[in-house]
Image: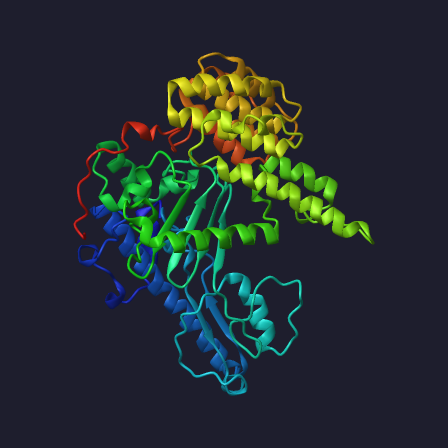
Length: 488
């Protein structure tokens, strides 16, 4: 709540026994243990009590109307807590949601269900539709991706795939595989920092506390996710032994005991991405452009053909997908700039895009000599025929050199008529921070449509008119000594 008075109005609706004392709470290790954090967590627990009261009201109405005994009731959340480390994060905190189902006795008997029952099987919110149809005795269409988890045609799932792409004005491309014991995460954009929170999150007390502690060097060890200036290609968490996901077992020196689990989950992710033709491998502006030609985003890698050419077209689409995926996965790995030399000349602009990212990131990651080499590789792409490739080349060229060629390219593209292309260029400008300071007057003069809310947020941050800090240089604070969390 941005206003204390706003909260107090709601708080008056609660019975005294539902009020929470912040001092008595256990603070998760991934947050700083401060009074502000405790107060925010207490408020959220009280909000849950308000939700309970509202649910009770709805259930009472069903009973009064004589509908309670023939109504299937689903209660669920659409994402994890709306807090940093929660919503928008590929963590248990961000992805695990409440899910409660009430079945009338007649349906319980028909499907041999025991009530009440706690079930720990893996489910996804994609499964809600098929489950509702199954319980109602309606055939589940083949095109529905989810699986019924309650009814006559239940299917047990061995893994759940989750995705994080750009959200609001914050770039992103990560995937997660959750199995009974582990969560595996693959980061395709390793340069995205821990503080990748969108503009609206600045009003959350916990966000402010995290940023304050980061500046002061007082973040607890468990909050290192927020202080990181880069992300590893892969993470693996043993949920059974580490439910708060504080320790990436893949990063441990003795991680060999987890090697089988790591390779298994990696293979599961690649298999899913290939079978579904996960379109996240295409930069957004490029995907939207190709979708116009294909008829839909799904159609980009699923060609609509008939007759004998169908199998050939599908094989060609999969071959293209595999080529792009291979380069995209290599970006976050430990390769020198020249590793991507041949891909920089590929005919497919998506391959050139990822190759440009790979060259630029390797230059930044390795150091000065590699940055010079990276700039030489990237310079020809500053005049690439594809605007999205030019944006990537300009971004990384400007990161690796002190010349203005890359900035000139971005200056030309921020005036693009295509909103997706313009937003990609603004993300690149924002990522460069002070390096792109001379472009601020040009960004300030941009006239954006009412549908370009996220580009407008980027514009505000680039020009210093946003409360969310522009381009936080986490290298300055990453690795400082931090005070231990009182709960650890």
